Length: 136
Image (cartoon, rainbow, N blue to C red):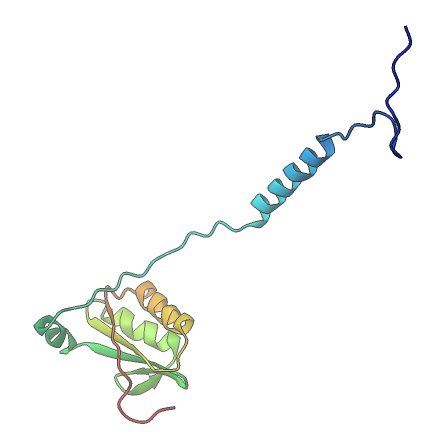
């Protein structure tokens, strides 16, 4: 018995589209994006906000680190990041207040906080407000 022929509509008779190459390409793209993406272990910095009288008591005897556009200052003295880490390592149990200047980027402040934590500072606080004096 002869096979019935399909009517031609300008294309090939009975052509089928195979999905296998499409599935292969999608699978390769999924593998590429899985391998290309970075799985970074995000670390967090714990900051606590003291309330009322505890805030005033915490500022007494604390080391003040100012993160400014022109550099770092520890209790008013210019200091490098390595010098700051060395000074904090000498007295890791002291309270450290970190005050960023108004136009300093967040990444720089986080780098200073991270370095202080690596130097052994256990009692870190981030304080707001400008330096009150000259602006860089």
